[in-house]
Image (tube, rainbow, N blue to C red; front, side, top):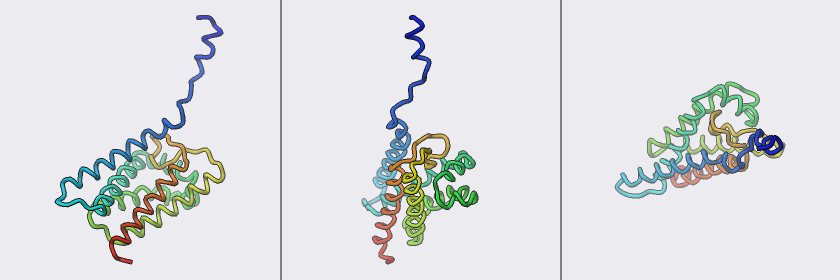
Length: 177
């Protein structure tokens, strides 16, 4: 090989951007499968029960990833979350809030206040993502902690708004309001 052809191989090629979403897709798929398999253990299938399981597994796993490196998560979260920017305490508290909500969903049936807390937390989180996207910030989403690098994008926005919407549907289904 001549020196001219070997010069270009020293630079690392970045993988396509879509590959950074693979860990997120794996987690979402596994939580969907876990929630579905748990329904087969029940006597009857219930969409509300399935949503509880999926939200519970999803939130617990995401909280776990954040808690593996709490300081790293807080650093990333403070880059774009509106409240975390102003409060390091909130940035470190967030995974525990997420874990608490996840465990509450897994208790079946969750208290209507769990749905309300989820709607508030996720909608507020979506506002921070929208703000960061409008500013064109090129940061990683802290949703998977500091170990897995997923770019902050509309995927994070869909995640937050999707969770808020599911909580709203469960709130309506609960008949509390």
